Length: 124
Image (cartoon, rainbow, N blue to C red; front, side, top):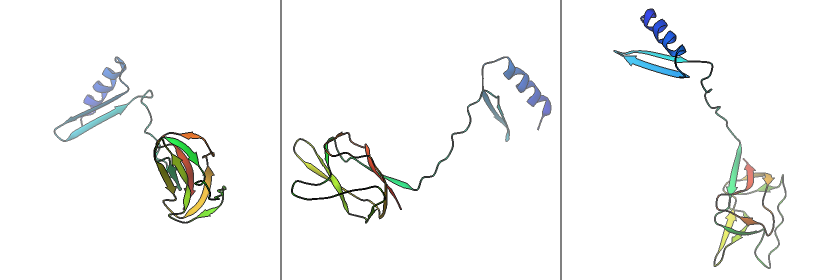
């Protein structure tokens, strides 16, 4: 690796507003980042699975005539009913995609929900 090239590129970068620079030639690669360069995004892992609204509509814990109570910490099995989103002409059932514990219940009876809005978080 040519250290003069590295010094030249580093000095040149000081005269610009670049935060990062990558140069490759003949199999050699130089990558320079200044203090202003954005850090690499953090990689997070989460043990929670979000259960989202399947449609735009009104969330109900249970269909009329049925009684269903959901509380945080409650154990659910895959396929268990978690409620229904009622849109203009259709009812969209919500079921648990995995077995586990309900760690967070954000759904509220009678609330208007948007497609993809997280209603529950289940921990496996």
